[in-house]
Image 1 (cartoon, rainbow, N blue to C red):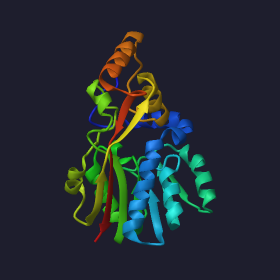
Image 2 (image 1 turned 120 degrees about the vertical axis):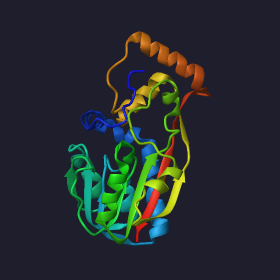
Image 3 (image 1 turned 180 degrees about the vertical axis):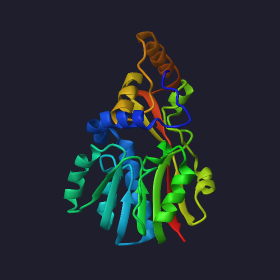
Length: 262
């Protein structure tokens, strides 16, 4: 396969992939929506708060986590960020549904100036794209006020294991299992809960897997198309190794992390 991943994310290429997939992402990203819902539920169980005064969600995309948070919390001042500036328009229906307002901040979260004294920083299915995750976590810890919450989801090392077995790492530079998170969280943050469990999807064919990846934008590091012969080899090997009743499988490996600032 030609989308072998480097150790760092090409932000321009990743942005282009997600921009291309914006129209299809919301419906195609069923697993990401499931993860966002569980992350918001996990926060609600531990924070036991009616709302948060000052909140930032980065990598908001089409609003799966935004919607899940607004269903459970009153969010007074809300900042929504996404790498793709076109995401702002798509988030408005989510905000209108909950009669909420938000300030949209476009650009990479790594260089974004975070508002100070935040009660909540949240992101779902995003931080696997951050090459220097410890640095970002330190920035988040500095922006949170004491007692503030950090709620994140990423993916573990079994994520898309079928594609990895066929020579692809699908582009994201930072897959970490639950045990690694305790080592990257800054000392100002107490780890409250970490969850990790596999989710397996079934597709009718390997080509349907590729269409799913394109629709969700997760092939953001792909460096070019395949020849007809390469595609045929990929399909044959995928069916040989990963066939299940009804088609072929694809594994997601979500990791959800909840931490609180001392």
